[in-house]
Image (cartoon, rainbow over all chains, first blue to last red):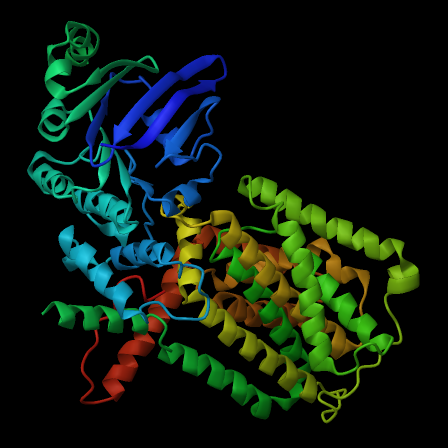
Length: 250
Length: 348
């Protein structure tokens, strides 16, 4: 499989601290790739570097063979790299309908239209309705996002990334904070993502990781520790010692 | 089934931009004031250009979240450009001169927009304040052109479209300002209900997420700041044309601060805040100044403190309540009309 997202010697320093220290990662097209590691290992920093929220101190990022290291965040989205956030980042004053509509309009290049009214393009509306239905948000689509229950907000968080129709999707702990009885809804939508969408998942829950991923990278202290198929990683005694040991303590 | 839902959603989306009864009432009242209050046209003229100026600030503050203490920079530039164009006979026709003044202010807005892209509210306050101070000092330092501290004398404004002469009672001035306000209001209304307008609210709500769904946050902020500067420039030009005068105080800090006050009184983010605020502010100023000519600023200050204590949210609720009440009344008065549930978030 061709490599769709690649980092070469990626580094990020905050003051004297190296949050990410020389990560070289290859993610294949269509992969279900999990990035795991103990708290503070630098997982979210890697995501922030990949998406352009942070600038790397050193190293390069390649998306579908092209160097995107210097590209602004919104341009990376336009190239097909979307993400969700560990802590919901939503537009609390807008409705799910408006929120999803924004992302679709933006993708179609209609986001800056200042004369045409929203909803005048039937294709856009059709797609909004389809995505809202897929993420079980149809019944709350007219409600203010800030008033939605947490589980629904979490679904919208993922739906919003999907509305960007990404080639590569970065999921930062999609089920974080979701009550047990609502988790399956979120995990089912993640599992049902189209096979040609490449997914990089950050997750603490080992059940989710091992049921979802076909490849796992372990990050410890900002460096890539182990990288391999789930069975290999599960068997690796160093991973057990460093990662699972610590997670049991925590 | 699915297509029925699509149609329903499209209808609901289209309805976001429909005119509400409250809006008809507001503009009918404005129109009525032209005919019913001829003796008050001078103060109504002031209200009209102040409303346009406040609408300009609402576009950046209420929709894009950019706070400014120096919006008078654009107002003042528009004012001087209009006065100079008229004085030297470069462009005599007031409407054309108005547009040119607005465009000049927009150019300044574009150039200075890059200063407000980054930073907190505090930095934005300081940067915008600084720009206005610089503009004032420039005008002060080139008295050959601007008249310096004496103001720009000898401005003669020719009839609008060659037909309507400005009169000393402000009849033509008021009609002129009101028409300009209405036209630019319609434009602003269209813009805030467009995908661009929605994306501004997204940027205001969460800039990080906005950029994560492909929105170019900086480009949107530059665009709305430039657009708002055009409005402020036109408002300033209206002042210059209706008074045939421009002086350094068009750039003053008090003007920018009063403008913020106007918007706080009226509320932000629903377009009418600046308009209603301008009416209340000017009438209050006029009323208090008649009551106690020396202490009117004391009373304005007191009102400001009360407003902030009561809280903008509650004032927002109050205006939302009026809107909802008006809506209920129209439905009651129209028998046979199907009850339409008000989608949440629309009331305000």
